[in-house]
Length: 333
Image (cartoon, rainbow, N blue to C red; front, side):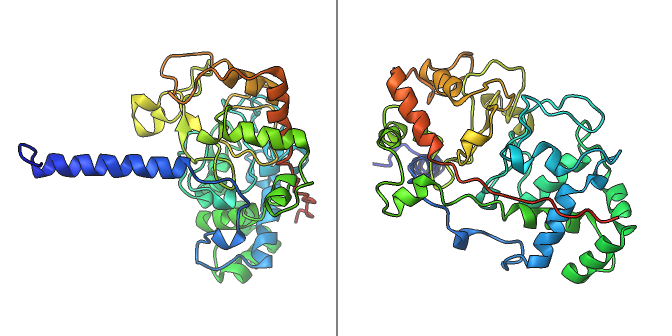
């Protein structure tokens, strides 16, 4: 059987086959409710209450922007679905940020971060907007120097981490500790999956069937958080190179990370560029098979959904709503 095939070629065929199997397995991950037991922590230990409170205070403190005009909560506002309600955010200097501010629900289970996947951990993600030019524009060494000058931060960082100095690494760890608590896992869908057959409306139940079937949403929006943590070109008109600019692979041109769908009713506008203002527009985009066909994923095909089916699908996505209420802390002086 192996005659004429070198061992190397056979090995590569096996690897390709296993890779295809892995992709299939990931794509087929069942929908469900995320388990807090599956959260991975930096030291394999859950965060202390004090570390979370420290991270929450930092998240809301404008001290982390160069002109003290913005905090993390400016673009990821709890009252706006942890977004900012704008197509494209505005940075501390008043200029438009090139991408939409994504929500931060259930990042505790994410494995890659940012629209283009340029951050590998939640700690790296937490620091990204702070130091990014055009966003908060704050060099991290200046940020920690500022924090060192505030007695609350000096004292609390020492108490939490046992270090005499505040470092960028510890800053990222603290903010990430708070972000891991933004958990949405008790929506009508979750109650339905737990056995309460009345938790979702009949319309939403039909929408769930469409989500897993005719609408093919589950091809990318799978698992407990409705994301495959992968990147796809879904046929949006855009000049943004997306994932391709990060990994140097032209096949990933205009490919962006699949966003999780929990609380999606609260997180408009949608897509990496905020170009679609409603879930109806989003479903219509997929229903017609995308718009810009160049390099589009082969997963994006016309769906033939009726207006009734579109409303049922949106009803199901509404059943993923479980708001997370966060009260702003007192900012130290």
